[in-house]
Image (tube, rainbow, N blue to C red; front, side):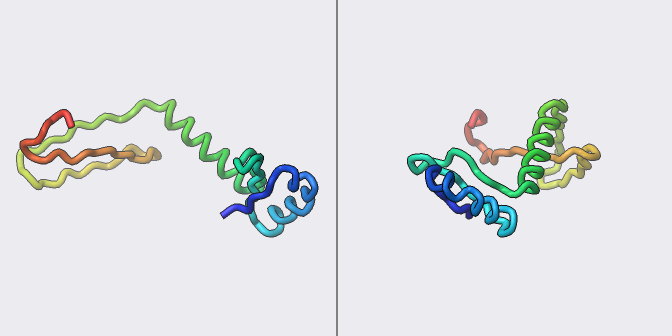
Length: 103
């Protein structure tokens, strides 16, 4: 949980807030009218955020892998190895037998 402080108070206590972040490992959220406007975080947190942003950007540029798997035997397992270096994201929806196929 981050420590919240109003912007007017943050101006007066900036050096102390920096010390809380650097030496205490805290995250400080600066608010205006009770709403978050900016945060002070350790540099390591910012690096992780940048890495995550880059990873999401890289994933969006790569074409999606589409798989169509079927089996005649109910309950039979099908093995699959995802492409090397790419996470496998699966979205599925259970469709009960005899239900509306569009839902």
